[in-house]
Image (cartoon, rainbow, N blue to C red):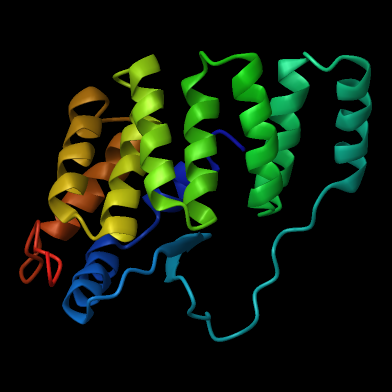
Length: 205
């Protein structure tokens, strides 16, 4: 996917409001995940007041990349670009297919591994997303993009604010002035705001 698209979207989120929603979810014993749209997060299954259209798929680019891949199946760059193209069009199942293909060709890229994990999350595979993030961190223990999204998935996918806090603190410690570090700092401020009990247990746990 575009290297900073998700990071910049997350950086624009009002984490205090959103994490308040997470705690409300805990209290209601529900587990939906959020959809990050532009600079806001929308809980899965909820509308934004009007029907939202996914970005259009660049069919010309898809065909061009497919031509390259057919002639050179081991062209990792083309495979990643194809996955990115599907991701940017919010065609996450197709993106997963090509991120997985890319990762099989080159299992050393934490960026591709993390993009694959994000795609898993957006298709409702929360546990698989977290497993993929762990794989990314094995490749690069200081990969801030991974740690930021690990925190997001823990918070919104698992309602595990304590785990999210740990992940976001690692981002800030690693790169406080980066886009990821600033987003993580904003998230930490949100969960420490009055009334936001970090690590509040999920009912029944």
